[in-house]
Amino acid sequence: MEVSVVSWPADLLALAATTPEAPAATLLEAQQTASDAAGYVEENWSNWLNVGLKILLIVVIAAVLRSAVRRGITKLICRMNRGVDAVEGTVLGGMLVNAERRRQRSEAIGSVLRSVASFLIMGTAGLMVLGALQINLGPLLASAGVAGVAIGFGARNLVTDFLSGVFMILEDQYGVGDKVDAGVASGEVIEVGLRVTKLRGDNGEIWYLRNGEVKRIGNLSQGWATASLDVQVKPSEDLRRIRQLMAEVGGAMSKEEPWNERLWGPVEVLGLSEVLLASMTVRISAKTMPGQHLAVERELRWRIKEAFDRADISIVGGAPATEDADSAVDASAGVAPPSALANPISPQSIAASAIPASATTKLAK
Image 1 (cartoon, rainbow, N blue to C red):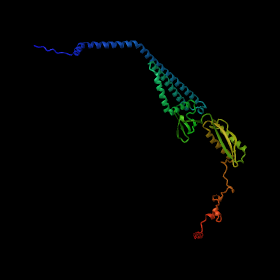
Image 2 (tube, rainbow, N blue to C red):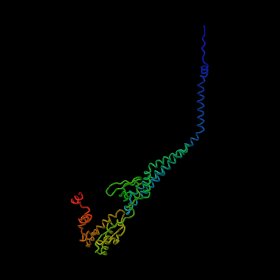
Image 3 (spheres, rainbow, N blue to C red):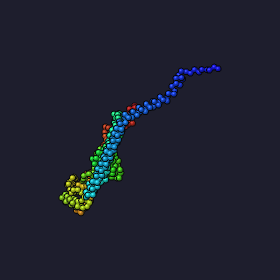
C-alpha cells in the first residue's frame, strides 16, 4: 500500500504554527492600552478636576453677579417710580411731573442698563471659560471683530437710531405727553422707544420718527410758554385808556379759575408794536404753563373784545382797501403803444405798402 505525501507551502505552515498564539497577543495589546489609559487618567485627573472647578466657579460667580446687578437696577427703577408717584400727589405734581412719562423713561433706562450688564457679565464669563479650557482666543476675537465691523456697516442706521434713542432718554429731551416740534413733524409724544418715537399730530395722525433722523427737537412743554396777543385799533383811540382796559382785563383774568393756575406771571401791556395810517397795534403778553399759551390767548382775545365793546372802542383788522379817483383803472392801459406803420404817410408805412399795379406795368414795359 502506497502512502501519498501532500506538500504544503512554507507560508501556510508558518501561519498554522502562529495561529494558536494570536488571541494571547490581542489580550496583551488590550491590557497595555487599558494600562496606558489608566495612567493618562491618573496623571491628568487633577488637572481636569481643577479646570472643571474653575469653570463651575466662573459660571456661579457670573450668575450671582448678574442677578445682583439686575436686582439692584430694578430696585433703583422702582425707587424712581415711587418718587414720581409721591410728587404726583402734590399740588403742582400734575403740572410739573408727568407720571407716565417718568415711568416710561425709567423703565427704558432700566431695560438698557440690565441688557448692557447682562451682556458684559456673561460675555466676560464666556471668555474666561474658553481661556480655562486653553483655547486660543486670538482667532476668535479677530473673527468677532471682523463680524462686528461687517454688522456695524450693514446695520449702521439701526445702531444710529438705537444710540440716539438711548441718549434722548438719558438726557430727558422729551417724554410722553410733551408737545414737540421735530422739523419734519410736530405733535404730542405718545410713545418713546429706543429706535422710534411716535407723535400724535394736530389732526389726529400718528407720526413715526426714527431717532437717528431727528436733527433738532423743540420741546414746547418744558419750562414755560408765552402767550402773546396783538390788538389793532384805530389811530384816533386814546392809548392810555386802551392800556388801562387791557390791564384790568388781565388782572381780572389772573384771579379767576382755572386761569390763575395757567398764568405764571402778570399780564403785561408791552405797548405799541406797529403804527400805520389806518391802524395801530398794541401788544399784550403773559407767561403761562407749558402748552397752555393758545388757550390763554383765546381767552384774552375774548375778554378784550368784550371790554372794548363796552367802552365803544373799535377793533380793526388792518388798513381798509380805499378806492380814490386817482387810483382808478386807466382805460388805455390795455392799448398797445402807437406804431409807425399806423401812420400812412410815415416812411415805414410807405416802404411796407404794396406796389401799385400801374408802377408794375411801367416796369414791365
